[in-house]
Length: 224
Image (cartoon, rainbow, N blue to C red; front, side, top):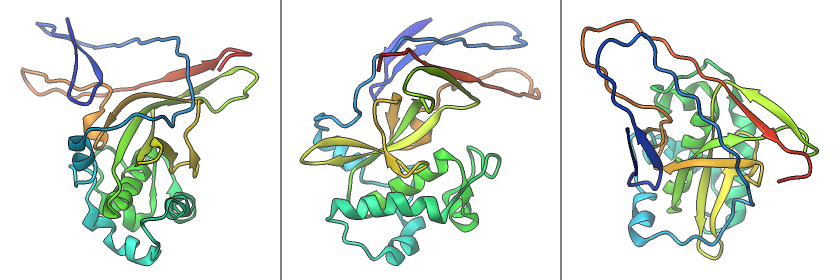
């Protein structure tokens, strides 16, 4: 086992195991102190260039028609808030409508998807406007602020847009609001490909594979 920090600033644990394997299981747990997501972090000039360009899953030409229909002033932050709220009206949240390989063009045509899809679309619009935007992956607590526990089958995805006078600002196109201290970011990247929670390489004869995931987020009463 080896640990390192990758080019996106994400902590990575590398595990190698020889021989036949019937199952690989990862159990992760953490106690996290959260804070409001917007901060004064200043990206490097290289980051600003990278987060304004196309990436594997985010292509600005795919949202060209959508950008034209919006007819908004990209220099105004209020325009970004308009797009954030409009996505909720234009796209329906439906689990199973897409998967990790579904291209943006399909999502835009069917207008259905999940948080990953909505994040990619919002990032594409922001980059088309010249705004630096990155993909955020992690967890979000949606229960009572008095304390409680929520369970889900997948991590959550949202967007961080860079505002020169403020820093990175979290935007959640799935809810139409800002990311706050209920969000626990785990990794940032250009798109989903940069922040996959688990990735690996198998050698040997092809076999049928399946995977499952579950997660739980608990808020301690009286704590943030």
